[in-house]
Length: 191
Image (tube, rainbow, N blue to C red; front, side, top):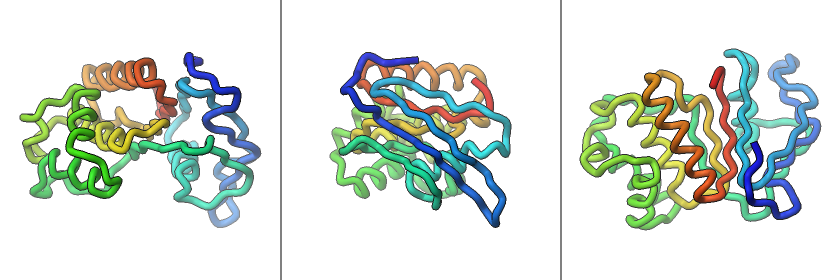
């Protein structure tokens, strides 16, 4: 689907991207581009290399070929799995304040991110283990929005989320694309 923002050059251009582990090709000579303000869904079965692609796009894995983001691109990344125990004694608010401190964002940016994903103060005041899977995923999206990204990269954001939670998350990302002109890359085993 193409968005309404077009500056003449793509937000992302990938040319002949290859990624291998121990001489085994995971991705070979992949090329695509993504226009500003558009959404791209990357769909495939588990083990197809989708998360590997996401990690290469954010610069976390070595690759050959070209990944070219437009100048001044800011990426908000929602990982497939967050290596954080949900029984840690931190609240959603603690989590968001930590992200804001890392990117030097204001308390106002946290409030804006919460409004954008539809989370209430009482929800983020709870321990991260006490909120539902769908609320936790929206918390991760809120964290990705802190720092005002131009691109939102979501790696399996609906995994483990019930159907109403999936619908809410999908509606939220589409609304953000339309209202904020965000470029969305959505990686999933299904839609």
